[in-house]
Length: 124
Image (cartoon, rainbow, N blue to C red; front, side, top):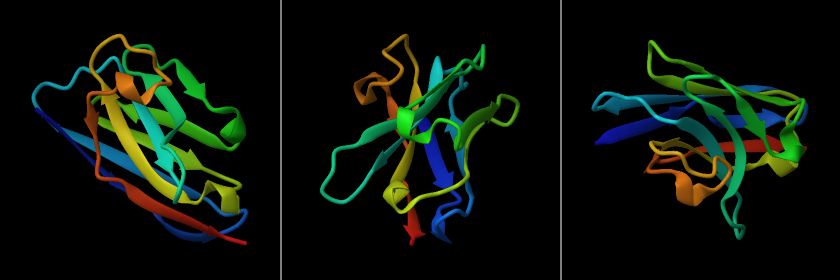
């Protein structure tokens, strides 16, 4: 079993930055990929960013390209999402997730483990 714990959310003004962290614990952790998703009130959960664990190939949804950066620390079993130039429309609960197989990296159904989520609120 794998446990994921996010941290780093909070309230920030538009244009500001936050860094989200995701710590993995449990059995030997060797995911295919780590991803970040978000869900705003009344909206479906959407893909934000992902990175493959071994090759560090990264993927982003168009709305965050150039503003968000996903990276990981294999030694510490952690993944991060650096968010710059935040906009009010980035407000959501952010979830990290681990894909333990070879799923479609941008699809939430591919991910086997999920964190509890951390709130990000961007004020205008």
